[in-house]
Image (cartoon, rainbow, N blue to C red; front, side, top):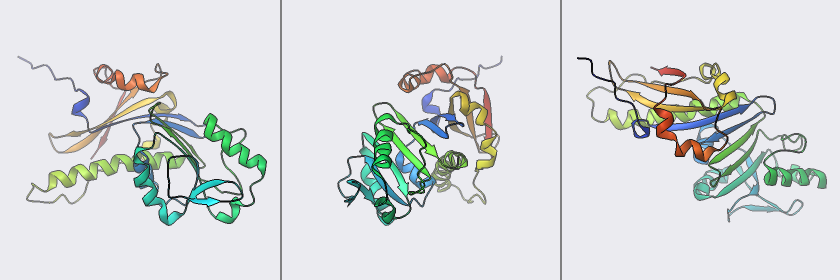
Length: 250
């Protein structure tokens, strides 16, 4: 008699990330992504201009009246910001550039922090920023503008690869032989799944034990969801539905 395959629940997975990409406006909405994961995946970050935060150790720019974080202080900022309810920042190359921001440009930065979208462009020539980063714990959402949208593929790939390396280190302790190579996914390979991200997709990582250890990412189209908290409320129900695509990582 055939044994019915057990359906996975949320606890059978290592990690879930929701991704919704807007290629035209060059932003991606994430849910399940931590700031520490972003910083580790796309390091090194340059100076950060703080637009919405609860950080007490920043430097102060007199011209703009904004606080900022020097590049060498970013690791400390990442650690201290782990419990931030809201966070919004723009990276920049040189403090002297802050002193040349016009009142209009400063107003545009404030608008971004308030409305989570730019008046014109999220990228400022004087700042030469690669990112605009906004996160809200209440909304379970992180919205990131990428000057180079390919950085979003690097981010997602590196987050998953980091989780796989951590898992392999924890299981490798009990093995007599250390694996010569650890499974990993490349940003270029992940880019081929952008069609799912454009609709809004849940990426669910798990470990495959047999016939040999590997990893899989189940991809589910969640275009019908408008509110991110509903995804996490319905997670077990969502996982009982057939995935739209399965990515093997070996």
